[in-house]
Image (tube, helix red, strand yellow):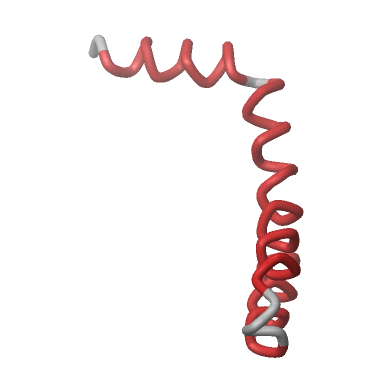
Length: 52
């Protein structure tokens, strides 16, 4: 939903890059927070599956 809104902003405000970039950061922020929280589990699972 956020990515659709960011794409809509890009279409409406193509000259206002700061608004579009702020929307892009807002769309990526939950993913970054989730990665930071679960980083150990993600790295551990990659490490386990790469040795098989």
